[in-house]
Each structure stands twice: as C-alpha cells, then as structure tokens.
Length: 352
Image (tube, rainbow, N blue to C red; front, side, top):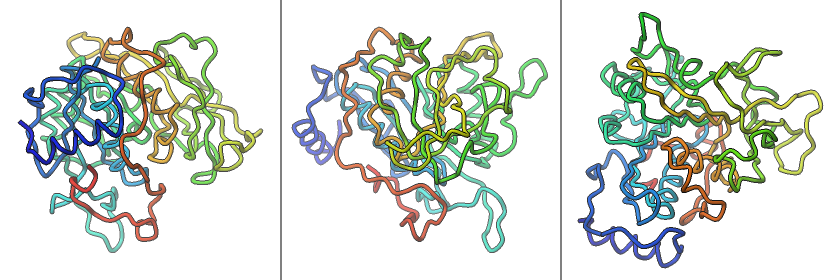
C-alpha cells in the first residue's frame, strides 16, 4: 500500500489530468520495485500497460535526462498504465549528479559512475536507456549485460548509443559485442552540423508510414542537432529499418529553413538483436531526445509507440492515446556549462 501522502498526490493528479486509460487498477496492487531514496517508482493506473514494468535509466551529463525520464515515466504510468522505475547515475552521496566527469579532467577527481537499482532490470519488461560514456563497476555492467542478453526489448535515446566507456563484458561465440554498433545499430560518430546551434526536423520515411511506431506521429522537431552514426556515403547496417530522417535546420527554431549543405540522416530506426541463446529482442534507437526535444508531442508519441511495439503490444497503439505531459515540465537547456545552466547535484526525490 502506498503512503497516504502519495495516494493523495496521485488522486490530485488524476483529477487534474484525466487519463486516457480506464478503469484504474486496484490500489492494493504492489509496484514490482520497493520505494527507495535512490530511485523513483510510479505505479501504473489501469490501461494497456497493466502488469508491465518499464525501467528508465537517466545517466547522461548533457541532455538533462534526469528531468526528462521522470516526465516520461509519469506519462507511461498515469496515462498508459505501466509500472515505471527511474534509475539515475549518482555520486557518493546518492545525489543525481550530471556534473561528474566522464574522463579524467584537470582539477577534477575522476570516479567510477554508479547506477543504484540495476538489479531491478530483472523484473523489467522493457528498459529505456539514456546513459552517456559511463564507467561502471563490473557488477553493474554485468547486470546490464544480463538484461540485454535476455531477449527482452531495448530502447535507447540520444547518447544511449555511446552510453558506456569501454566494452561491456559481453561476447558471443568469442566475439566482443559492441553496445552501440551491434546491439543498437549505430554509435555516435560526430555531430552532423553545428553542435548546439542547429535543430532537427523529423521527416517520416514514406515507405514506413504504416509502421505501428509511426501511428499518429506528426510534427517531430527538436532543438538538438543530428547525429551521424555511419560514414559519409554509407547507410544503417543491414537489418536496421529507418523510420524517421532528421533534416538539420539553419537555426534552433521549428520554422527555420533546412540546411542545404546537410542531407538528412536517420534519427529513429528499429532492428532486432539476437542474443547468445538465439532469442530475438526488438530494438528501437532515437538519436533525438534531449529534454527540450521531448517537449515535442510528436517525438514523445514516437517513443511511447516504440515502447508498445518493442513489447509486441502494437495492437494497443492508437493515434488517440494521450501523450500529454503530467504536471509541470520546464527542462533546463542542454550543455556542460553547469553553473550557468543551474545544473547541480540533487536527490532523486527532487525530480519526482
């Protein structure tokens, strides 16, 4: 049973923000993850996601995943019925700390990163990854590998495709598995345009307009730039299907003109990952997805539809399902100038 203050908060949110999914689930049903000051849990209301558990990992230093992943979890739980757990990259004090360096830097002590709660990947039906260049203890890497070799689905957002420094302890038939290139279908190579100066207009691939993930999706725009994940003149690897192309714009406004010198590149695609035991996992990668990008309802719907598709629930995808944000969402700007942006270590509860 949830504490009374949590029940009252949930009731107020429900009255203020009507849910698309009814009826409500039993209030006595337990969330699969116990409450902790080191992570956030959101119990699902009734709806298509009833009985399914989604874990969202927020552990980047640039794109404010610590703000966006709780926002996405609220929508997935309150409007779609999924039980959600948000895990964070934290410092020695247990604070969510995007300011921790990812490389040894002059004047800064370099420490391993840490994501408490990775043991709960074992109960997840889907994991949404948003790390960036993490150096994790081996035990935590092994828990991630156990999940990605389980055959369960994988979603990766933005820097997720270069989420870890060095190789994960994962080999198949004696060959090292690459997290970005092998599992996800492409790792970050470079910014395709001007970093923190361009924005991206998402263009649906005409041949894929009837794909379930694109159902009801329109008007995709974000103020982050396009990533290149393959060499110029190349393409996504065999087995990847591009759903959305990203056209770099000549500025950071949605009505800015396309950059005529920059061709569109894939910013969202799907593939399958074959595990060591031969199981096939559905995979979705979006290289869009900064916190400010996710103010776009079209991009949120794309990712939520991908969540349903990845769990083989595509029959439950409807253009009318709500992707409206629950409560306030005022994300800080992307970047590493932490003091100027107001990025400081905070306890997970402050992101609820």
